[in-house]
Image 1: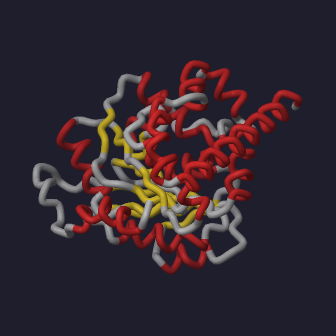
Image 2: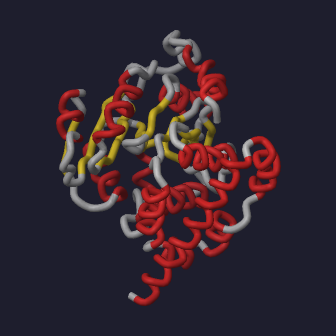
Image 3: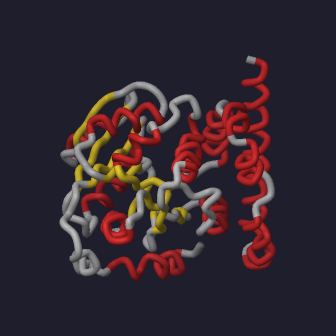
Length: 291
């Protein structure tokens, strides 16, 4: 996505009139939980995007896993509630909820940037429509070639509830579900979302977006996918039908012909990433089967 088209998507969110749509309720506290591990390169951007939210009543909880860079300094400088917890992301997130004071929880990665009215809209949807949780769609920062290729994937996934997961949720609902499965590594979001849906809880969709500053290189993508793939065996066993629809052919891929004509280089880069991800996930799955 070119810079001008990215701005076109975000531009409507620049209105800073506070809570025009939200006069029908008080302002319940929202706890925004951010797990970190050597996240200095992106954390400042993430925190500033939270601080500039139009919604006034929020707390930022950073849960750090043995960072050796400037992550801790940045979190302290921005006056977050800072905790340390070793383990994977699911462990950090679950720990963060135990420290949260809010009625609502928003789970945010340290490489994400939320546009100014995301929290406001999520609270409005829950308070005014009875939603228990909210889906927030992502687009991708596209500074490098490989980020543009990942950006194509994000565009294809927009609005696809088999891929997008609830990240904003009532704390009471989170507790009923039992939090994130700490054995599922990168599939914790899918697992939580399936349990949310199967529990009969009501979803809504935020009309504002998150910008994801994804890994800038193919090597980073490969390492992350291998780590996720270690939990693939358990995820497939737990959700065989969902995993097939998520990881094999998606209906959204029918749109690829348009992008192949529009930007063939990015299209073939996207295909390359998908092939690398499938191969890496398969190798990780084989390793887990041997173990």
